Length: 405
Image (tube, rainbow, N blue to C red; front, side):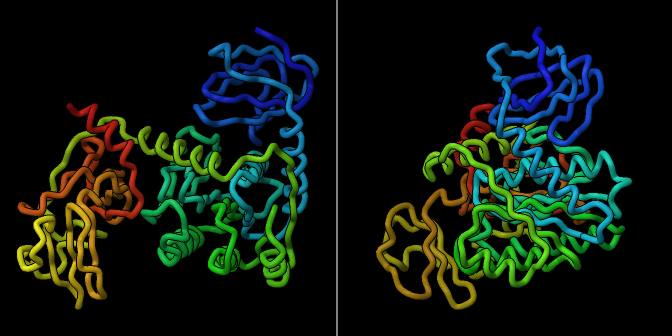
């Protein structure tokens, strides 16, 4: 047990915090007198204590709880954005910035705050994350939305999602933009909403600028909230969108290598957590219930014609030859696409039932002789067909396979 004074704090997971005898605001969610919340591993929450004495307990004891200047800055920026939104006709708030710039934290704080005091705003808030690498609402590789309170890393009810199959829009910008457009238009057709949109950290280069412009242009009256953009990006942004807010938050620098590795580890943790009761499912690749595979579309070609023993499978499709080979394939020329053996292992997969996403899976392997695909998914999840993405999670696959033995 301990006592917290009035001020701003942060708690780093994994841990559980109980507060009593005070008014508290946790990531934009108000809480009076008694509240408790769980912070998952790898996540940090900021909260504000509004009374002079607040009793608390935390478990495990090594969980870090401390006063924090960053929390004060985050709440200050939240308040600036909220004051801009009150009694206005904005239908979209689009957060743009590089990785580790607190876009997700501030956007969630703004969404939770609007949701808790909706009388001051014209439309019901709806949160969308296009951060396909770190989606905490549903799953990495998805663009997702939610209309209930959000605490990063905790389950969110009634999430709407669209599967991109990638962990960065740079890998398939067309599919990425199609997904966000589809989701916004679908939700907007049902009711008037104030969309709070957290974008990914891809902000360098013309394609990145183009993708963010397309997202902002989905809304009739968008408010752009940005940080740490280069001169060219700011020029384009401010020319096309007059309503904008820039926020600045200083923090200790994080090397690109460390930041990338940290995100990779957290991404794998989010995917692994989704498999509550994994089981193995075998599907016929020649059926029409598998989308996204680059093989089994054309006419099979006898591998022996290449005179290379490493060729496992080959087919001819749309004027090109697709080859699956164990080792280096010697014939590198136009019209031949080579896939290395085990290329499919760990690929993220979306399961669909009646046209809606019902679950996720990971491709385990393909048997080219029998033309069968082995998939690991949650037991009992209904599906009519699956869609195989491009992002691979081999370390998650190994963990799931070991649990099935």
